[in-house]
Length: 205
Image (cartoon, rainbow, N blue to C red; front, side, top):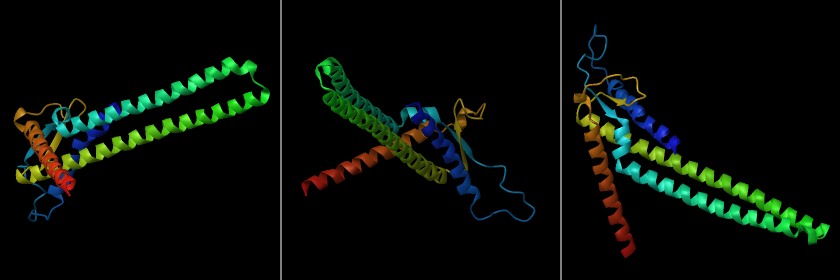
């Protein structure tokens, strides 16, 4: 599951680029002789570790993915144990079999082993696809909220701040993590409530 955290941790960094682009790709406001944006650029930062820790959507999605992964692992182990039992049974009874019977059993066990390997690969691909889908959904939700928040509050740049970032020091006054986390969670709660109402109406039809 470390890959999930690494992949999602990059979401906030990409959001920085989006906000920066939205601001500086707009119609030029400078007059002749000016080199570019004024020195009053309004910036802020987000502690990405805090966002990932307290954003309810991510916590719920991660728990679902981990639960699904454990269930898949149990299903695979159950099939593997069953096949191992068949191999052991064949080894015990091989001495009483004819060459033809032994060959037929070995061929059957070989096919089952191949099917088990294919099943394992299928589970891995499915889990990876779910992980990528969750990462994309998180990216969309975070960048959408930051875009809206940045426009409403006049922010031009939002930095990602964590142990791996290039920011060695940032004043606490620029930290908007708690505000963004609350906004993300409020939006997530509203989405859940809206979806629940839609599901309730659909069931009544």
